[in-house]
Image 1 (cartoon, rainbow, N blue to C red):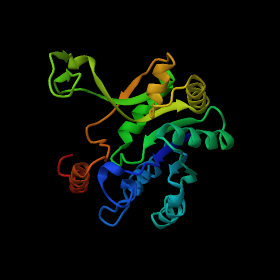
Image 2: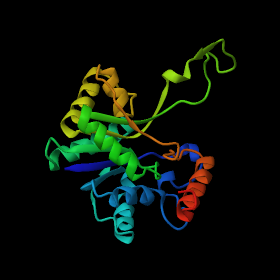
Image 3: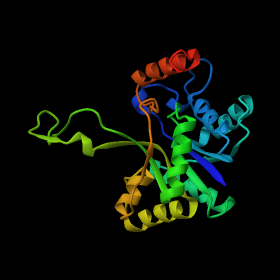
Image 4: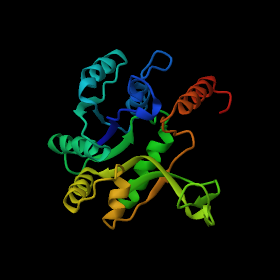
Length: 236
């Protein structure tokens, strides 16, 4: 069984809007629905769970009905942090799914994830037992103590920027978050950083510059442009 666990429990304060960013409407559709549709339409995904803000749970179910998201099986109340929210979602899956279920943890505000990214994540997971979407860093990177100046660069060929999905066996994912809680690791939203802190290897799967995380208003404009390009199809 393969389940997508989407996170949409953030307040989105950096966006500066009254509505959390995952529920902003772009072309008459909430952003979270764009993300849900990607997994709804992927034949490898059997079910979807969504972790969100408690007062938005009913809205999510209504949106799912309106936009025919039939794979959505669980809408779960988020916690006080991203790490706690994912842990909440994993606990619900643990209660309802076999322990060998494959879980793809994905940011709800990454609505441009595509079938190639999902498929490669599952392929790398099958080979290594875990997969973290990532892309190589192409910019020059400097290290700075004060944010104003630097005398040290970091070789960019050694750097990779992680995205989502992060794919793990449900049993292993639950273990990771429970170990993090026991060991006092509380500031790691991403499961890959938790696993790294626990001494586990991290294996990279295919990411994409298009797999953008919507954080600022500039990101919304980029998202709109990507949607327009995707619909036109002339760059295929």
